[in-house]
Image 1 (spheres, protein in one colour):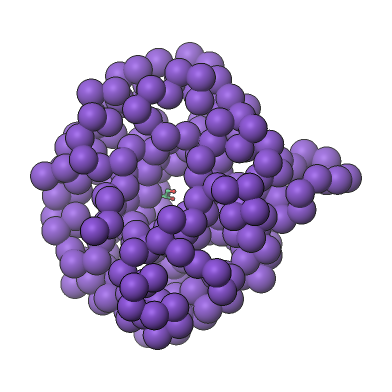
Image 2: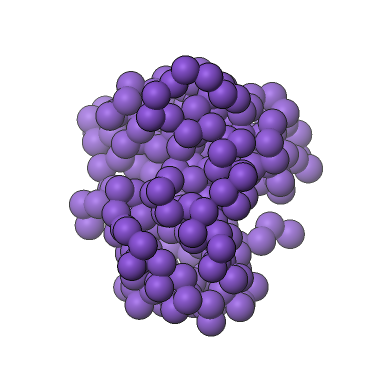
Length: 245
Ligand SMILES: O=C[C@H](O)COP(=O)(O)O
């Protein structure tokens, strides 16, 4: 049985005052669903120190364990700061930093090497969707971004259509169902049924309290990766509540 996951990605938002949101999430985090917040790297240690029932994650890590990589953060550093998850291959990283599927796979291995769970993001652009290429793109990203040793414990996959991120545009539930079903069957083909059925598949892109229940009712949606609506507990807690049903 897959444990539902409500993951919040604060992106490049938040200073120390934002950590009070973690206190306000404690009640929401008492339900069956796991609650995760991924703050900016500067806040991971402080967030971990007061996270209570909320898990803490990073938003990226370098593929190397250490070395001359100015400005980067290693998986070990995130782990040392108290993180248990790291988001990898987010479309904003792929676009802003030209991250390839191969690099995402190396980063995933770096995360696994220190015991972090990788949340690997995939998703098509608007052009790709309108060109009928969604499943090709997602299939290619899954094939090349995931190393071979995937398990239900070390990996979560987030389907985030690029055109739905921060736009208020959300795919239809049929569109989400099509991609999630495709992802599950792709994982079954590559990793076998037991492993594939253990991997949580999140939907991300303009999730908010008003659409969460409908999205979480879609087969093979095991939770959400939420951006804008995760920054305050007053927005995020109702999404967690919807996931808990
Ligand atoms: O990582 C989160 C996603 O990019 C979704 O962001 P959003 O909820 O602001 O659309």
